[in-house]
Length: 471
Image (cartoon, rainbow, N blue to C red; front, side, top):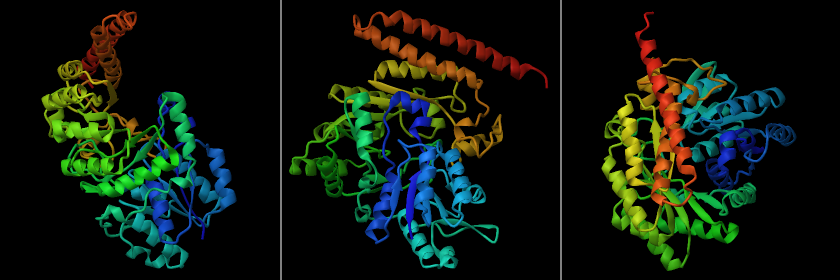
């Protein structure tokens, strides 16, 4: 039986990513591909990133898989539903399996849209058992496989939760040979002068941020041994010669003992790597920063989400904004590039909180920062909090959670202006510190900041007027 794994992301349709051009391979399905192969199940991967819908349709029509597994996330849901429709029409005998972070909270909807099986949580063991059951024509036994959702005689059924894999060292490395990784390397090189390969060393996140989805790996912390990770890095460097590694872990420095071991193994192997990672300020100190530097880290992203302690507490981030500020400065002091993440429009955030965020960014002065407007992901505490406060009802099949608008302190347009105001005001401040460098942009940035601030004022007053208008 032919098994195909794919995902629904097409770079040519993503205008925002086309401005950034930092695509990464779909590690999740490459792990499943490797696990299936390790257990004697041959499979192919159709990597849609540099492809298009027509090529996908042509490929599966010619290949005619018995089982197709599709990774599904928040962004790709509409595409995945279209793919399901095409497969149902052209290949009615193909079993459609969905997995990924988007499926847990909407499993029944995906099944009623045409999927045959939903894999909930980690996919390796569940997918292997499912494929074997289908291959051996034992589909009646599927209800005994943990980690699945199915329709049985029209009734929605979820099987027992799949236990998480305790020893991640037992997993094979991602099956990178199944994709054309050179396309990714060339894209990075041409746009950034440095290529990158993504690597995962851990699964799960034990922290409690209300807006963050833990749909796949749960609120756990499981990690591969330093020796196992370094073996993968050796393979990656020997095969692909990347310019850098992007560790996709949620909190890379969560365990300082592991970090010491990782650095020791790298030094013993005399393996020189260059990487960037994400972490939390409360899992950093001077020793951890020095270990990052010694092991090859050139850029560390330190989560903040806001410069207001009030908002951080509303998010249940359990970190102090002063600590975030201190760790960004300390990392910079030791020669690491720093980055941070900011979120505006979280429920309860006020204009005073946004001012505190601007102050925080000016004081900590990270080399990079990104800003998003808060949106509720299904299955998270934030979604539960604002579910009854939604101001629109976007069609589930054609929209994503990013399209959900809910009652905020100010209207949605206010935050569009606020994002521009924060970006321009902080970058204006940065250029002022550089004195003669790029001085011509200083008045332009200040003007844009003032205009955006004016837009915030207008929308703030519109919001107040709308609230005072009798219904």
